[in-house]
Every structure is written in C-alpha cells, then in structure tokens.
Length: 267
Ligand SMILES: Nc1ncnc2c1ncn2[C@@H]1O[C@H](COP(=O)(O)OP(=O)(O)OP(=O)(O)O)[C@@H](O)[C@H]1O
Image 1 (cartoon, rainbow, N blue to C red):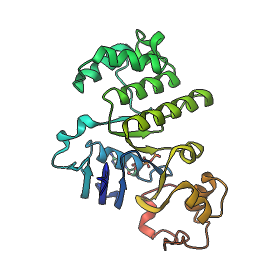
Image 2 (image 1 turned 90 degrees about the horizontal axis):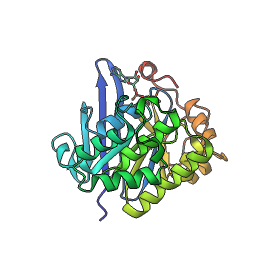
Image 3 (image 1 turned 90 degrees about the vertical axis):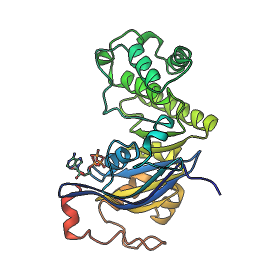
Image 4 (image 1 turned 180 degrees about the vertical axis):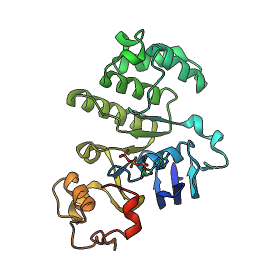
C-alpha cells in the first residue's frame, strides 16, 4: 500500500470564537499535486500552517511522511518546505545571504553548489548580491521558489507560487516545479486563485468553503460534474451556491450554509 505523503483526518482549528477549519480530511500521495481552492477566509492558509507545524490543530490528526505532525514534527520538518509570496524573506539580507541562511538551517551539505544550481536554473545569478527587499514582486517570487527547493523537499506546500509573475515566467516556473516533482516524486499541496494553473498542474482539487471541504475531484471530473468548461466556472458555482443538483457523490452544494457559517468566510 502506498504511504501517503500527507494524511489529514478530521482536522479543525479555532481562533478564539472563529472556527476557521472544520473537520477536514484528505490525503496527498508522493508524486501527486493537490490544489486547495476556496474564497478569501475559507481556511486555506490555516490548513497549510497546520501542515507546516506553525499552528497547532484544535482537534484531528495530521500525518506527514508517516509521522504525527503534532507530536513528532521535528522528525520530518527537514523533509518539507514551502513558498508563499506573502511571507517576506529578511529584506536587508542579499538573495545569496538568504539562500545560504536557509541552506544552513536545513543542514545542506553542499550548500554552495545547491545554491548556485538553483540560482542558475531560476535565473537569479544577477540578483544574488541584491538586498532581497529591493527586488520586484516577480523576482521575489522566484527567490521564494529557490528557497522552497533548497532542501530538495519531499513535500512542497505552495501558496500562490506564480503570483506576480508575468505569463511567460509563470509558465516557466510551473514547468520547472513539475520537472522537480517528476524527478523527486514530491507531493505538492498548492493553494491558488489561478484556476488555469490548477487545471494544468493538479491531479486533484479540494474545494474549501467556510472551513470545510465542500467538494473534491480531479479537474476533469469536476468540469464534467458541474457541466462546465473551466474550473473558474466551477469555483463560482460553488462560491455562489449556483448549482442545483448535488454532485454525484452526494455533496449538496446548493444548500445554503448554516447560519453560523456566515461569520467564518466571506465568499
Ligand atoms: N490569527 C487569527 N486570529 C483570528 N482569526 C483568524 C486568524 N487567522 C485567520 N483567521 C480567520 O480564520 C478564517 C480562515 O482564514 P485563512 O487565512 O485560513 O483563510 P484563507 O482561505 O487563507 O483566505 P485568503 O484566500 O483570504 O488568504 C478567516 O475567517 C480568518 O479571518
């Protein structure tokens, strides 16, 4: 039996009186790319933060590479990494200093070689001596991807990996990440608002709303079930409760959320 790279069961998280994530369950296999989709406030960042061990769940379990993330996260943290354009790397450090810092943090043996390889592949050579804070948004995103791959992670958590990139560079970065995944059988969990990206690179999609997973499936499967031609329309159907019929597996997405759900999300 294939061991799941990520296995989440009945995971919930409350912030005081806000129940941000409500009993979600899902799994990601090695070599698989799964998208976490949902409107603002749906619970995506909270979920990713729990997977990274930054936030403790209120209840439920998270197994990462077979380890319990709550009890034993230090056994596996060096095997994961993440990239988010919303988490700034230290601004005054140069790109090289930042990448070197993270190499040391992850205990990379041939740190300099690894750094230079990534810099070359991600077209960062001319930026290595620039303060990270002085870079354009797109340049910072490329540095963030390099930082995320510095330890050759088996699990990659990506929050909007191509935000701020022009279409040509975004396409290139997507292909680069997919190539990396193929070589390393990495599991990828991706939060994105870019539906074309999700359709192109994800094997499975989890649709979150008000902290719950309200539907899921392969992109083609969702298009078929919602009788849509693209994922953006499926997203809008779910966000606006527009679909009349329940999905085949019995999820009734036409149902209005219970009254107390309204305070948790703003789709
Ligand atoms: N530190 C916090 N304290 C209190 N409430 C929080 C905190 N962080 C998030 N929340 C709330 O939890 C809910 C889920 O937020 P989260 O950031 O996980 O959503 P998201 O899906 O990532 O949204 P977005 O797409 O806007 O980034 C929201 O209602 C949010 O206001």
